[in-house]
Length: 254
Ligand code: G
Ligand code: G
Ligand code: MN
Ligand code: NA
Image (cartoon, rainbow, N blue to C red; front, top):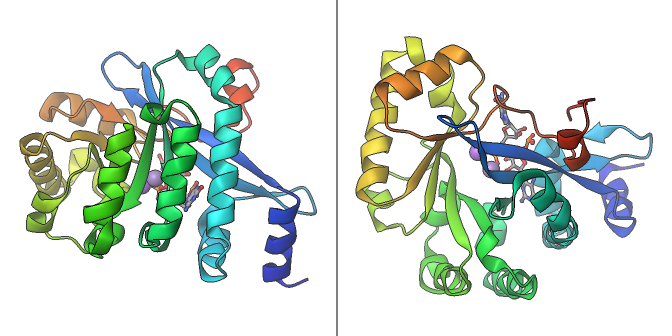
């Protein structure tokens, strides 16, 4: 069967599951938030990462249905999330750039967030590309989200289209430093310079800074010794896991 048809059936049958990856305070090792990362359980029972099917879903106009499913699943899991991580844990959901440019969808999505009864617990992760397109995002969507208390994060920062001056125009609560600058940061002076620049900009603009893709103790040590960055996310702390994996001793990552 063609991937398109398989994806259609997967949406119809809701064959998706959410993996959660902690955002961690690197000083206390406390989980401050969770990023929701979608997985597809295919017909053969294999778990497919979103890399390819998200792109296809965007192309085929199916991504908005998927996003609603993600939000539904996450809302249904809030009780378990609170039990595992505490009541204040924020929940980050990814929104593709193309969705962010769809004002109709974003308006509905904001209404769905509000309907959860706790929109202030959610954060929406948008890539630079979404911000770069500007359009009505800045004038309509971001104020809408801000109005209901939902936070906004700039994902994969540093590899997209925005210049540092474009960042100055943005109003976001968090900036996630792309993992390409975090990998081996302790022995890559150029990455260190870029990270420092993002750090001071983030500070000046009052955004929380989070380092993505942290995998090693050496990277962690660099962050604590040489920067003021306090939050990180990556395999060093945890892979994206099903919620029940955080509370059981068996850990199967996907
Ligand atoms: O886990 P990783 O392979 O888990 O994710 C790959 C890409 O898929 C990332 O860029 C991530 O932002 C994106 N992604 C994961 N879940 C979702 C989702 O629910 N919606 C959208 N639009 N993108 C997602
Ligand atoms: O939304 P975003 O594009 O940032 O998606 C995050 C992606 O990064 C997901 O595919 C997730 O599985 C992946 N990821 C999370 N932590 C790590 C890490 O420490 N190393 C690597 N290589 N990938 C990671
Ligand atoms: Mn993300
Ligand atoms: Na990212």
